[in-house]
Each structure stands twice: as C-alpha cells, then as structure tokens.
Amino acid sequence: MIGQDVDVVALAALRPGASADALAAAMGAGWTAPLPHEEGWVKAVALTHGFTARLDVNSRVATLDFQAPFPSATTVLGLHLGMSPDAAKAIIPAGRGIPLGQAL
Image (tube, rainbow, N blue to C red; front, side):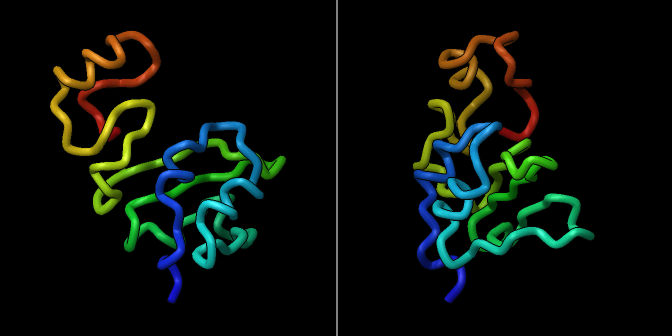
C-alpha cells in the first residue's frame, strides 16, 4: 500500500536544495515524480502523512510543508506540530527565518 514505507524522519531531515532522489527515497513507494501540469508539487502522501513538497526546475526541493497528520513526535529543526509558539521561540528565536504563528 502506498505510504506504508514512508520514512517520516527522513522527510523531516530534508531541507530546501535537497535532491529529488533524496525526496524519493524518503517517500518510498509513495513517490511519484510530478507530472508537468502539477508544476513540481509532490502531494502523494499529503492525506496519509501530512507532507507535501515542491521541486524546482532543476529537480531540487524548493519547499516543504508539514501538517497534520504528520507525526507530532517527529521534529523538524527541533520543532514539532502542536507545540506552543513560546516553546517554538525557545528553540528558534523570532527573526531567525521561521515565521512563528503560522503553520510549521
């Protein structure tokens, strides 16, 4: 079944600039390369794992999005879904590139 072998820890470790191959490895059987009309969006596990990404024209990760049902026990840059803004600010102070108060 698609999504059973998704490596959420590997997804959480991805950063913009990572290769499409690294994204594919983390997504396992959930990986499908985006079709031209999808404009680089990778959404195969959006509903099952709360993860989407977008590839740029060079097949590098341009953006990553983590939302429910992404496991709250899995951290991304030390942050996790469901944490309070104060707890997030203690890890990454405001002004360091992550807009607090928005979806993490």
